[in-house]
Structure formats: C-alpha cells, structure tokens
Image 1 (tube, rainbow, N blue to C red):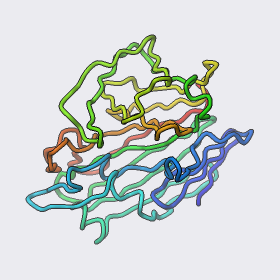
Image 2 (cartoon, rainbow, N blue to C red):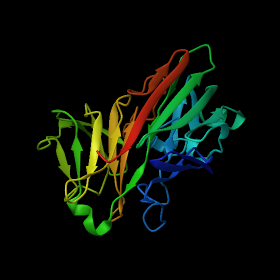
Image 3 (cartoon, rainbow, N blue to C red):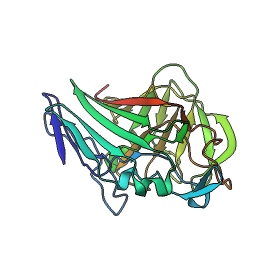
Image 4 (cartoon, rainbow, N blue to C red):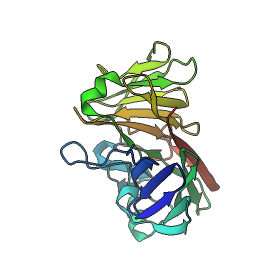
Length: 283
C-alpha cells in the first residue's frame, strides 16, 4: 500500500492494479466506497487494456484470437512502484509473457497520482514499444460513497449547457446500435429514479460533473477532459455511485471485435498516450 498526503487529503493506493483504496479529507471523512461483497468488492479499479466486456470474452488481431477478462487484466496485476514521494507516486506495469498471451502488444503502463490542494489528479500514460500501431481501451472505475438512506436526495450537476448522447447498452453490458439525446434540466441528473438495472453510458458529455448532496452542496467533482465517454453505475441499493471516465466503450453486442477496427479504441502509432482526470473535494 502507498499513502500520499498533503494538508487537505490523504490517499491510499494499492500496488494491485494501482487501485485507490481511500480518499480522506483533513477531518477524516472518507469519500471513496470501501468495498463490500454484499454489493461490490471493488473500490476504484483502473481499466486497461479494455473497458467493459468482449463478446464471447475474446478479440482478434491479425487473425489470432485473444481471451481477455472484463475490464482487462490490469486490475489483477501487481504494479512496480516507480516513484513515491509525500504527495505523489507513480506505478508501472510492463508487458511480459503473460500479458502477451491475452494482448498482443509490447507496452509500458504508468499511473501517476498527484495531490494539489483539495484535488487528486490521476494520470495514465501508455507507451508503445512496437514499431507499429497498437490498440487499446482505457478507463477509470472509481466508486464514491453515498449514504444509502439519502441516495434519492443526491444529484449530479454537469458543467455547461450540453445535452449528452446516451449510448444504448444491452442488459449484459454490450454496445447496441442506439444513440439518443439525454436531456438534462439545468444540467442536473437527480439520482432518484435512476435506472439502476443497467449502466448509463454517455458520449458528447460535459467534461466535468459534481456530486451534490441532499442540500445541494457539492461533495466531490470529477473533471475528465481527456476522456470521450462517461459511464455511471451503481449496484442495486448500494451506498455508492461510480463515476467512470472512459476513453473507449465495450464490445458491440454479438461482434467479436478486431482490435484494429473496433470503433473508439485508442490507436497509438508511436510514443506515449496520456489521459488524466481530477477528483476535487467539494465543488
């Protein structure tokens, strides 16, 4: 476990998948869901090299088939601590014989966590070691604590006057053909009546969202300007809400995806790809 801190925040991070385990303010208030098998044992997995599910659990590349678990393999891999300071750290995973069995590219994957005031910045960096384009998905899956007895009074407020586009998903989490505007009144999505039987996935979404409590006060805000998609998810009746910036989307329903042609995957010709999101305590 790695702990980083400043005068405002203390954040704990596991070397397993580089997953955040805790975000506490100076008063000791916990903002991250703490995991419970009765609902969901995860807290904030990092998703690489895929987001969501693959049809039949496989993808192809240049005629070869590769099996990969839901949300990729990063969450199940120990990462090397490359840097650890008082208020920041970087963790590293390099491709090896095990990753090459399920993902046919040589890479390095880094996660950096940095504290600035009351903000936590998470930056992903993918390095391509091949002499050709590599393809991957990438995303975050943080769950923020919301009291179950007050959940219906909470809401999400999105920045700007933007009508997001909802991506239709099947009951088992695959992308369907439907795309439709999802109007928000004054940029607000009340959590009362939220359709928890499945995830909500959006494109063309505002790049910042605040979680408001029952009084309308901001609890946390998430800024995700480097990400094209936003997914919202909650296990039934659970005391948390996942606010998930994704660079990509799951497999299309019934389509065994070819990595080089699946829409929305990151195509990295050479060098590095970087994407960051920021969690701010309060508004």
